[in-house]
Length: 138
Length: 83
Image (cartoon, rainbow over all chains, first blue to last red; front, side, top):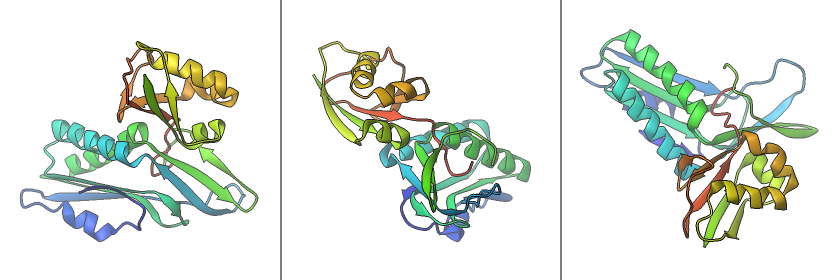
């Protein structure tokens, strides 16, 4: 399952889509819109996407994972549009025969997505807004 | 030749628009297109070093060739699902 969508992510469906008979582990990662701890109160996060290219780059990430780990399924759903604090902006589920592989592959997926998938985040406060363009840690 | 340029996020803010059709001389590459755009939009010039370019949904170098009808996207640093 690979999607770029304006709608809330069905997290259960993403996880379920990664189940495989030959997998002993499914690791699901959620990236969630968070309140900045340093003061200014967020109203929401506005995500902009280049959907056609984002889909293509997500597929690229999946192919990279399949060449590096014995993954059975790699599911990635990226949401865009306005997203409220606490909601998921991305869900990734990876299944592998063993858990260590699944954890590693899932970690790789989110790191790589942040490098190459064209989705941008704007923080919107009561008195303004700003694009977030740093490559920081989650 | 004409190419179709798409601006995103901070690049769209800098250009004050999201899409634009641009005429270029035959043989122009990505660098030539960026030169034209940065001249027209000085705020875009300030972002130039951070912007990556995609042609028909694939990242390319500034020396990459362009052809009639290409979709060229200006891609500021992406922030993905989490920060």
